[in-house]
Length: 78
Image 1 (spheres, helix red, strand yellow):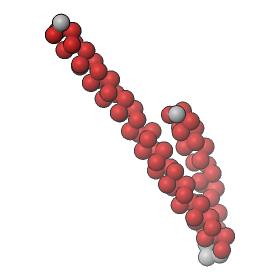
Image 2 (cartoon, rainbow, N blue to C red; image 1 turned 90 degrees about the vertical axis):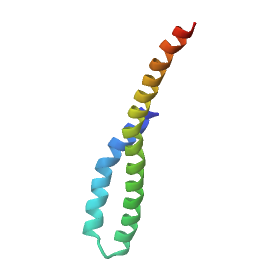
Image 3 (spheres, rainbow, N blue to C red; image 1 turned 180 degrees about the vertical axis):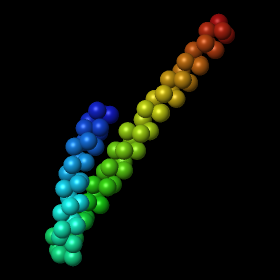
Image 4 (tube, rainbow, N blue to C red; image 1 turned 45 degrees about the vertical axis):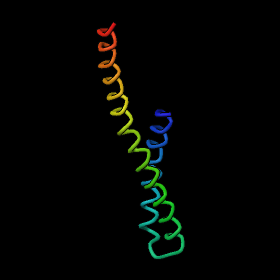
């Protein structure tokens, strides 16, 4: 899942830049308004995938640290 989201996040970046240039060049027209909606959706996708890609490694690292910390305690009680 992480690889797929990383790939989506990476390939949407150039598309986002193209859409941003198109929004700037068509400002004030109907096409510009449609492109702004598309751009807003892309920002939301970037925010969600970016948050996941940032937080997931931290979450996994803390989970592994908790598991390592719990294993010696179980061994001592036996």
